[in-house]
Amino acid sequence: MFIQAYNWYFDFAIQSLTIRKPALSHINNFDFLRLFFALAVLVTHSYPLIGMREEDLLFQFSHGQASLSHTGVQGFLIISGFLIAKSLFRSQGLLDYYYKRALRVFPGLWAMLGITLIVCFFFSGKTLLGYLTHYSTRDYAIYNALLKTQYIIDGVFSNNPYPDAVNGSLWTIPYEFFFYIVLSVCFFIRTHTRLLRWVFAGLFIGLASLYLTATPSLKAFQLPFWPLQGQHLAELGAFFISGAIWALVPMPTVKIRRLLALVAAVAWVTSLLLGGYSYVQFVALPVLVISFGTLNTPMLSWVRNYGDFSYGIYLYGFFVQQTLMALFQLSLLELMTASIVVTYGCGALSWHLIEKQALRFKLRMQPSSPSL
Image 1 (spheres, rainbow, N blue to C red):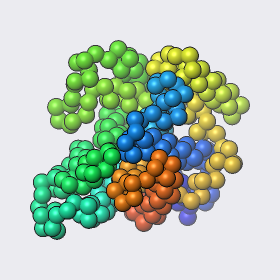
Image 2 (cartoon, helix red, strand yellow):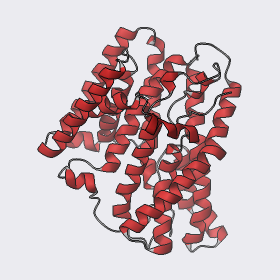
Image 3 (cartoon, rainbow, N blue to C red):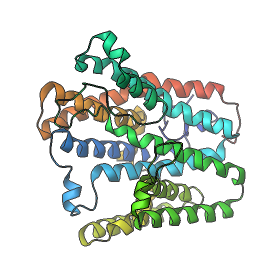
C-alpha cells in the first residue's frame, strides 16, 4: 500500500490507497518547494533571534520589498490553496473535509506544544508547581491548541536577544485554518466550475486590492470572534485563493508550464530590482509556484521518498532557534547551521512519529471510493 506523499496542508494520501503505484501527477516539485520555504523561514528568523534587524539577503537584494520568510509563507499559502481546494472537491462531505484538515493540522501542533511545555520548564526559573499553575503556561497551551496565538510563557527566554517569544511562527496557522473554513463554503457549488472560477477571481481581486490600498482601518480591523487582523487576512487570503484558482483550470502542458515558470521568475526578479514588487507578487509568485511545483524534476522530486517534513520544520523552527540561543548565544552563521540540522531532525521525527501515524488513522476511517 502506497502511503508516502502526505502533505501538511492537503490530502493526496487518500487517493494513493486506491492504486498500487503513485499517479504521475503526484510526483512533482511541491515537496521540494515546501522544504525550501521552510528553510527560508529559518534563515530570516535567525537575524532577529540573534539581535540583528530582519534584513536577510532577499531583503537587501530587493531594497526592503521582500524577505525570505515572508516569501516562504506566501509560497506555503499558494500551495495550500491549490491542494486544499482539490481536497475539498474530492471530499465526500464537509464532515469528511474537516476531519481530514483537523488530522493534518492538530496532532503535529499539539505534540509540539506538549514538547515545548516540557522544555520551557527548565528555562522558566520556577518550581514545577509554580510553572504548571502560572496563567501564562496555561494560556500558551490552551490558546495555541485552539488556534488563538499566544507567544509568551513567563520567564522563558526572557534573557534572549529576542526576548520572551517562545514560538513566533505559530501566528500563521490560525489564518490558514480560517481559510480552510471559508473555502469549505464552496463545497455546495463544487460542481459549478465556471461559477467557482468567477467567485475565486472576485475574491482574489478584492483581497489583493484591499491589501494594496491598505488603510489604517484595515490594519486595525480584527475579527470579533477570532483575533485575526485585517491586513494579514487580505494578503494571505489573496495568495491562498490564487492557488485555489489554479485548482479550477486545466493544467497546461509541461512545456507551457516551464515557459510560464520562467516568465514568472523573470517578472518576479525584475520587480525586486526595479520596483513594483508589491503589485507583481500577486501574479508572478502564484504562477511561478504552481507552474514549477506541478513539474516533475527528478533531481528535486526525490525528496518525497523520505516524507513531508515541512510542517514539523515550520512548527519547531523558531522554538529550536530560541532554545539554541538561550543555551549557547550563537553567531548568525552558527545559529543558521545548528538550527537547520536540529529543526530538520525535529521535522523528520514529527512526520514519522506523529503526523504520518495520524494520517494512517484517517485512511482507516475513510470510506473506500474511487473518487477519492
